[in-house]
Image (cartoon, rainbow, N blue to C red; front, top):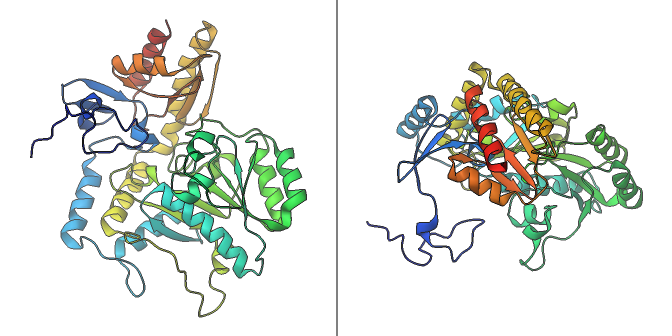
Length: 409
């Protein structure tokens, strides 16, 4: 079938895009290898965003492709609702838990980060209900926080424009500043008996790459402990090596009660996500023999997605990509230091292999210039975001810095 890309909009409705944009005005990516993308004109691009913060091991890895193919040839798909299960789902859950601060915890599997965060929000309220705390329904969100686009995640957003225009959202969400633990303490002092959970990215990603202030995450952990609330870390971006540890929780030395994951768990080769639940929190789910978990998705535990996760985690392990993230960060900082010394950027922030350069003005024109020069980055406010595959070479880090310098000039 021939697709007409010259029509005003075309059939495909693109996410986070102008619905009237012509299909022919989008860049049509047709192939990828390593950190390089190629469009339908033959132009090549450096993937400086690991697609959307997730392609940790780079593109075209046969190890993952073959694992998925083998699984599809063995068991293509089947649900894991009671009474069914499959080997790959069990294996993926065990591997994920083993890399987390909760090796004795439980792992719920889904397909997207949005599904994971909605699951975590529901579980946090369910756990409070089953612990006998029916009044604990408030979820505390943070300014700049991004938690997907399902109804729960949209309600948990700390990015105002993403919450607007949808009508009434889920009730009982309260926002606090992303860097002021005293404000959080005041909220707990007033409403602590009603707070079910705090949802928090260890490093805020889509909101602009904001690492936590010193002691901030520890302060949230302390407040949750004092008031019987749960701490949820949204590790959809931070997880699987991005921050220089397997999870952001380990990078910052704070252990949450629930952790969401997606993106880097398969490097995007298959849709897989989930929630890691601490052993203590999971114990509250099974309070009696009638305590059925009435939550799940058609594709929870999909064997091909789970196979991709297993192969991807093994690659990250075998190739030392968690430590590699810190090396990528070191080389990135060397380049950003030089730009800052020359007065070309106002500063930078980040950790591991996710960084934001503050250019002091609208960053979209710089993003567009860099894109024209074959380097894909992201623009958020006055920041240029760099989050490449963990396999990025030192020369490619240098290319990013040189292209940014050229664009700023």
